[in-house]
Length: 456
Image (cartoon, rainbow, N blue to C red; front, side, top):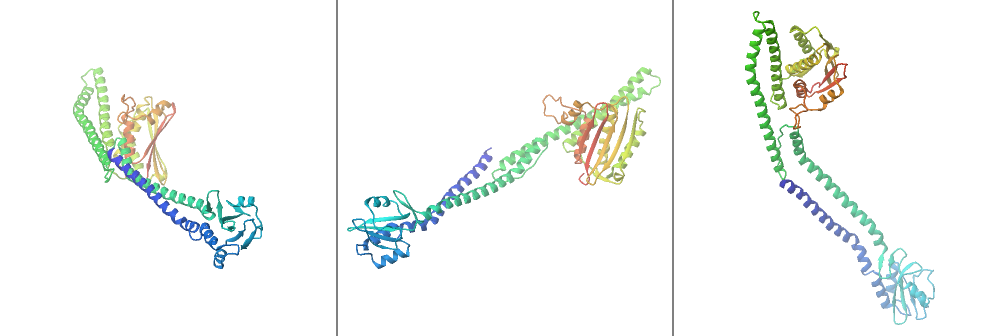
């Protein structure tokens, strides 16, 4: 958590620094943008300076030629009123400017406009000087005046600055997000992997190295636990095998002993058959644990699944299949020549488990069909029977509820047979999927879907 806080603090400090930098740049941009306006409005050509310059040379007789030219060059007109409000002289004044003004007229335009022209006045010893500027040059307020150019420029400046700031902040956010996700993605992926109970390894430097080390430690613990579980199951399987073989041997000898009572021989045969089931369960348990913890070596090679199904069926028939059951093979023409890169022994084991499931769940007999079909991308192997099928609840349980080896429920009551989970593990090891379809009273169908070319 300490390294994560340090990592987050780094980006927060960087973002705060960026905001301060933008504020500083905005201030510079504001000064740069309005420097000319401020200089013009309050420099040599400002209304107040021009008014003082003109008033210095203005009198009832007129104004100096130099000042008159300066006013004209800057598009400024001037009039001079005597004490009675009569216009004594003018330079460049518009036609709409009257010849005479009353005291009331002067009071009206003194702080604002004259015929929509912004005007500036200065009292002299023998009259009043009035300077008029173009109509679109200044906006006058009771306490001050402002350049219309600056007022028009200000909204565009604000919008432009905000737009630039937004773009910069968005780009920083976008690339920071990408960098954070890039740095965090290996950790997230590893945590997701750990969540499935599988080990994960991650190498990382910088602020997040502490979290990466914690993930690796958790992964090492999972590896040791998985190794311990697999070794324990393997050890138990080995320890059971010897006494179980003795039980099976003695039971078979008694079952074939002609001098023994028939009832005893029948019981001995039952013991032998149940011992075979125990042996198969132990083998399944050992194989499931090794596949679950990725300790089972997978020996893949190009295999003809059509030939594998025929070989399995022949072996099953040769070992003796009860008359209540029939088994048939349906292979699509395109699937005859397809080679699938797989572990033939494991695929045969998966098929055998599914066939045995059909036999075990249909004691009154059923017809079993092994079918093989394919497309350009996938190969489909299905095992179908026309037996009693599965109820909706049982089918949902098989599809959704985990086996007790995978369950996180403390009660460990979400479970189904080792046969199906072994098939699941074998299919997963070949990057395939398994789908169960069934209706009560209408049989059951299991479809194994393997991607062609991705079995390794």
